[in-house]
Amino acid sequence: MKGQIPYVDNNYDNGVEQNSAVPFYNDVNTANVEEKLFSSDVSSNYDGVKAKNIPFPKKRIESVTLQEWLSEYHLQDELQNLFVNMDLAMKYIHDQGYYITSFALDTIELLNDTINQVKFDSIAEMPLDLSQQKNLVHDNIFLSTVLQIGVYANCLQYFTPDAIEYLKHNFNQFSIFLPEEDIPYYRGIVERGASVYLSAYVGERKKRDLTTLEKQFADDGGKSGGKSLVKKNGNYTAEDLVPQNIQENEWIYANLSKKDAAFARAMIYPILVLVLGISILLLSYFFQ
Image (cartoon, rainbow, N blue to C red):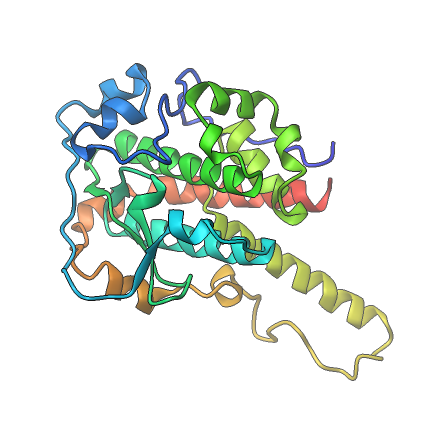
């Protein structure tokens, strides 16, 4: 079936209703973010975990909030690039052992007049418990996805908890506003509860597209002049085809101290789940 993602993260509790409140427009007190962001079933898993703001150095840096940036008209490819960069910043934050406590538009900044420098203002430390890490990463990816769909469909202001529940059961009505090549990704996150970073999906999709194009050049009898589009010594990776903004994120989040080896080991399992999700999402994309 076109666009259908036959994948559910079986390690995630499907009986838990995701994100009972989504403060995209309202600034929130991050000290109470668990109570507002998650359903009662989920919040009970965070006993003893206190969210707190991570102080950033106060420098005079040119910045604009995402709410201000979105007040002007932007083409779809600009939005696609922005969302990949937001995803890369979110992934970097996760890799350092932290998570995003609010996706309110006025708590997300674009620095120095570029969409490559995305700064999330509301961040808290990850707990060391594996199941809590997995749920927090899952919810961050889900919230980011809902934000993106709301922007594409120009209806983010209406995404109350009831509206988000409607989105989960009526995704096709929103899919017409999304970039066609990214619909399988958004469907997988919203309908199937997949936990996959957008940047990883885009990189894998571009790699598949490039490999397919290379095969077409090879099948045309060498008319392409013998030039190869794909590495001779191995395949491209997602990192090759999607700039990772490593220097930008290291600078923006320089004050985040990476967690110890225990956290790194604990994150191995969620990463494996993400890799599996990407593979199945892409299979759906190319065989729909």
